[in-house]
Image (cartoon, rainbow, N blue to C red):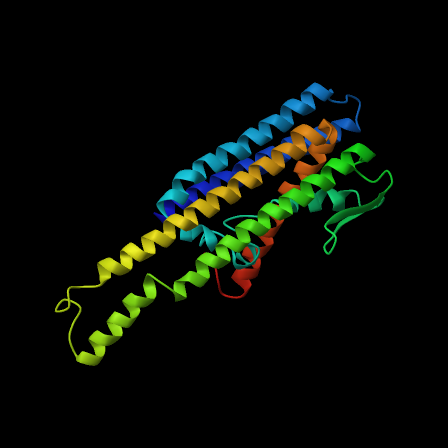
Length: 261
């Protein structure tokens, strides 16, 4: 099964690299003799988003087969896994990238106690307008709320391992050991464990699928509804460069530490 998971991820990395090459070419022509039209940039952005959505559609079946694997995927390096949230990146990372790209003239953050967006901005690399910034701040706030909801549900699921239905099975096994009898003599037990784990697996699947939905919706809203075509290209370049760099450098780090393939 791991081969299918690995193939899906490596195919996605290859698509990321190909899309990044196209995006970088689009940026370079903006400073050359021929600028790409807004329609051409928009078509490129939409194609990249289709690839992102198609990847998550391929993931859907794999998550259904083995959702716990996506919480610490063996096809990722240890550094990538340290940043995993509900099977992938945090959706709010896209928004933080926008803030970082505009950091020369933009400082924006959420005032946690009051829950308000506080910002000051200038031109910045992306040149966000006031109306764009207001929409980015709003989606940041709503995305964080949805992330917190999923995080809370994940924590509850993990804490429930110490409760039913697994705990009674553990106690039953202890009684077998103390009495000196076997599981077979007491009617088994492994089937109960498998059934309990399957119940948790189904809950994990729903959470990973919900997180994937939030990832796709956040990215789509930003690049297709809020940002201009040129700004969307800049964001996609930054996001893909970040993922590919973390993957490559993390893999090299694992090799130096005697880990990884």
